[in-house]
Length: 208
Image (cartoon, rainbow, N blue to C red; front, side, top):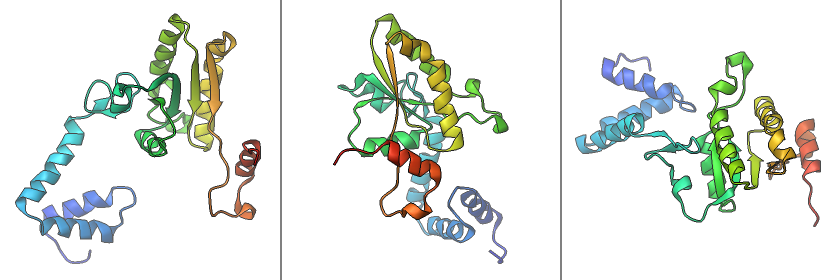
């Protein structure tokens, strides 16, 4: 915005503008929308922001965001401990839960392997996953590990690393590692799809 604004207003616009997907115009609209709200509504907004800063913690079992030691999924009765779906972040858990088709547990890595960015196995929750599988091994319980990392170079590399790391459990027949099927999204054209996507679509084909 070209007009000179009071510093607190400009600071809030700048804060909104730093959020992903919010441009300068939208940041300005959000700021002036808040300026028109009552003190009660603004305080509720501030309290909500403070809550995510101080009231959340990683789930002790899976690494998902939680306001208790265990997240809502891990606390939910009836969840199958025989399946652990490995995802990159909490938004992936939300997306998979919306399908209402999966009833196992999750493991949130907190990112993907990316040596260029200095992210290796120690920067992710891989050891926590190892500990979970070791506990399952102690009771000789079979587990399906579902790799649901994104179909990016980093996501594929992370899935491959985990597959290799847990091969001893696979060989002992205590673990099965699967990968979510990937293919063409609805409404897309084959001619514009990249070779990797087309290959995955062919590999994941089903009988009709």
